Image (tube, rainbow, N blue to C red; front, side):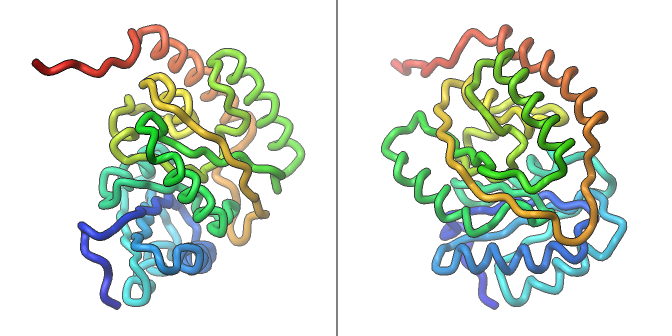
Length: 246
């Protein structure tokens, strides 16, 4: 299959994956269907899988514009997202989780909303918010409680920072400070830089193959540390500025 040249790619879809054999092929096909007629690339970043995830992705490269990047070991979701964004060839990046719970059919809505706001250079992100979580009650409860605390402490108005489905300007992302687990604070970090973030309801689906990589309590413990760190970052920032050149 002849893929689009680097200069013509308009949308880069970045998907972090780890041990998602059985999920990645149908997910890639759904992305292709959702973006039919769009000049896009799908960048799957394998974060140290020990199953056949990479082999399944490589089998798709002749039939669709799929790129496969691999970390030699597990470095975490935030690093995988950053690796994909740095490799992206398009000015607009869309991220979604690799477990298939984010529905690729929602991608065109995010792209349309982003392009509709393109005349306002301050808008840097359209963030998905899952309208109905298809997770266990324990995860839903922990997420709802955690988001309330985080929203109160960070004042970012975000109701669902755990939704992986987002569309944003690549350039704006690369301005952000990097740290492990930063993907959960992208909205706050974008606002910190003076960008605007719009929210959009999106769908959510039960996981297909495999199992979740996150537990409730381990996420809560690192979440508290991260939250305090992001609060520190906000306090240590004097605000965005556009320098004037004479």
